[in-house]
Length: 236
Image 1 (cartoon, rainbow, N blue to C red):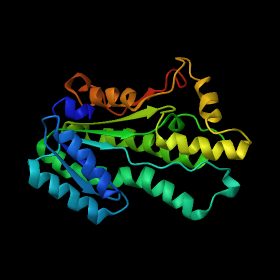
Image 2: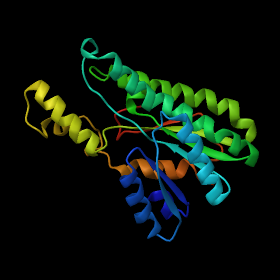
Image 3: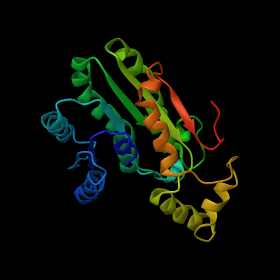
Image 4: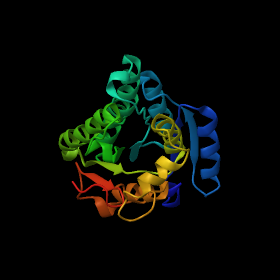
């Protein structure tokens, strides 16, 4: 929504086709073009089809935001191999898959902006989020390496590291953690709020504003960075 407000045409890609279509319809009301596409970021063939659809529709790809992700919170001893694979495949391999798919188009153009949504967990790992942290540390490292590879083609690659964003994902995490710790629903999220120096939970809009900056001309001299947007919880 923020990028649409800045004038960008948007391809909304989601594993849920209905969600993608509904979001695209909302964006269309803002006076820019949007299409909704069903996409699983683990599906390389589907990603290639998505890229071709975008090229057929608008002729170019200027921005890629890699923001598909899941969180499974539990002690490492309780993790199933399938859960490890799913977390790494979506959170990290998905970033690789989508970035690789758009790079040739951006190289042909001589320009492009890639923004990877990492996490504060990509800077500091915390108990019961070890596997999630592994995936997000990987995103930070991939961002740094890719940025150096494609800089000579006029492509900027950066990451955003959000903190505790009040979304449906964190509401589900709150339920899981509350049950594990013998707390009431809502208490875990409330306790996390107390750890944030700015004194409030993060909103999606807090993240979107930084993404909008990173894909703008104002950030043209920034690449390979992983920008903390954590309300003061993370400093490096």
